[in-house]
Amino acid sequence: MRRQKATAVLVLGLVATVSAPARAAVDPPAPDRHTPGPRPGPAVAPATIRLPNGFRPEGIAIGPGPVAYFGSMADGSLYRADLRTGRGAIFSRGPGTPSLGMRTDGRGRLFVAGGTGGDARVVDVRTGRVLASYRLATGPAFVNDVIIARGAVWITDSTNPVLYKLPLRGGRLPAAAVRIPLTGDLVYGPGFNANGITPTPDGRGLLVVQSNTGGLFRVDPATGATRRVDLRGESLPEGDGLLLRGRTLFAVQNRRNVVAVLRLNATGTEGRVVRRVGDDRFDVPATVAAFGSRLYLPNARFDAPDPRRTWYNAVAIPEPER
Image 1 (tube, rainbow, N blue to C red):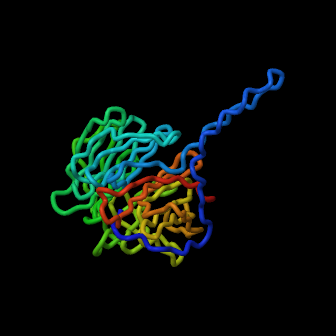
Image 2: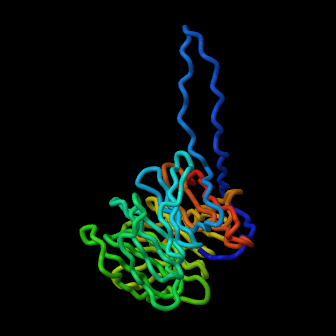
Image 3: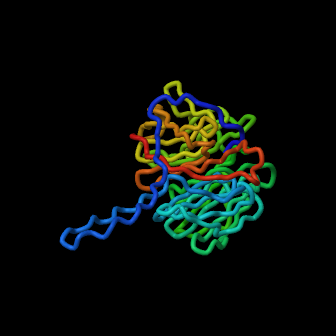
């Protein structure tokens, strides 16, 4: 979620490589009537998903099923793609302000962070209709990433030291958001602060990465009190989207063009960086989501000279070993 030119990085550890999408095979000649012909194999899902020129993707959400949703930093429009074919289209026009982090729930709703718009909205994934909008900040803001955990939607703000909470009692959307000030070890400074967010492995807390310092923090969701996660001397500079799978945390370091793979304890108070994974197709990946055995990352290309004319995509890599 942070807008500067990607820098070359020495990747220590496994470098993930993903083959280009397979081309359709030429139809074989008709088999002899006495010899059974080969059965066609399953289609190979594309490893690159083309997005509209000028779209400026940032956030991604996947599911239910093999469907990915992308948000535009340009005007907030939402793009829906079939992961089996790579084809897609804009299904909800934006309000003219960014769409950043996003998450879907089991009720067909997409929760979208509004960036500099200082808001969040809930969109019906079938129709693209806006079900609810929430004014989160009245002054400068960068409403950034979203997670659904502990019966609520949690949203970070990279400008203001708060979390925004949308309680989902019985699945119902609330009338307004709850503002939870962040206190403790996470101290805001110049640049982008709290960014990606995810639950702790035990589900009792939240984890937030601070982009400008590389710190990872555990947040008490009841009080907003933060505590730095002990990473044994490591940090996550340019930390962006987070994805938790069991006790493994995948942390995108956008301008570093890598995904850090961390192993956490159950409470999320300690962890270690196991490896960092890169790919030649990374061009400032911002966020990450999983489907099957793959991770999908939209390339934000923050330093494109003319974003309105720039091509954009999302790429899939094999999920790194945990």
